[in-house]
Image (tube, rainbow, N blue to C red; front, top):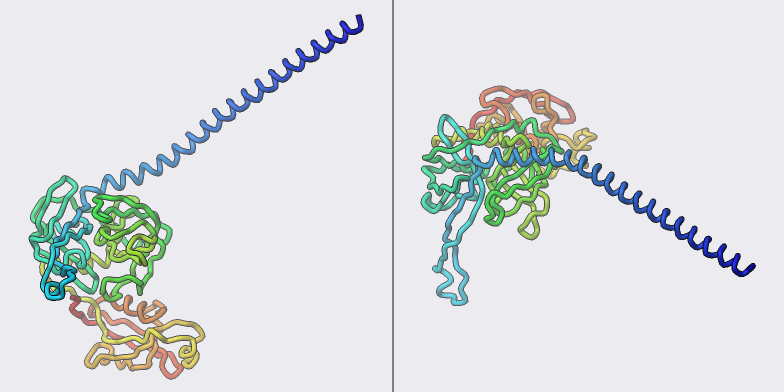
Length: 376
């Protein structure tokens, strides 16, 4: 009787334990289902916020797309030959590509790109591909080597891009690029403005540092040259001109000419005119370090050290001398020679500017009036 009673108690314990286990696992499963459903709900809500932001980028790229062109250029280059006699004269035709965008200047439509994209070839070797799949031949090309710019006159109805104000660009601003990296037309990349005052860039195409460059981190490769840098409103704020690379591809460092500087030159040369830039006629010693600063009584690395004064120039007429250190241009403190060169290029031709110069451990004021120098 006792054994039977114990058996019944054991069976009841097993059944009760099983019920409890089932309830526990059922509760855990229900909690997991509820948690996953709640997680999905929160995920979708947060994704909608990002999708809304992404929609701005998508709309911006779509809006500006009709104003972007792909540029195809055919060039003759020396062929590599194992036979010495042939290697001197054999040339082959190769195809290069670049990017550009459409602007309207004086009621006419032009394509702006880099000089190194289209320079050195005949007009009939250049084909402009538009977003509506037209293939156009330029009417005329005007170039400026100092700024590495080309202004291409077109004889067709085109859609000009909206132009932004590059003076308002800030470090950290979101930007887009649209171009033809490695010939892949209309590729869109996104990044930020990494710096706004690069004066001496490590990868230029021979242009003089006549302006400050934007540094951007958007993926930029061969074929992006001449293409626009855009703010997220779809306005052009710069023109890509160079990349810093050790292997030929994007390493997250590219440089663009601010659009305000671009248009200043483009408007002058669009109709075959001569581009003038402000000039005072001085050269700078870019290696002017701490030791030299201490000798003239400066405790900071500021100022542009004058190493050359051109005869009969505005600087010569103003009695600026070799050895002077320009520490202020107007009311702007001068950081170095590159900075002073940029300030001169932004000055107004024919309008006097007051310079503060360090000479014989004293500060003196000198007025100089920039004249116009032909920019080629």
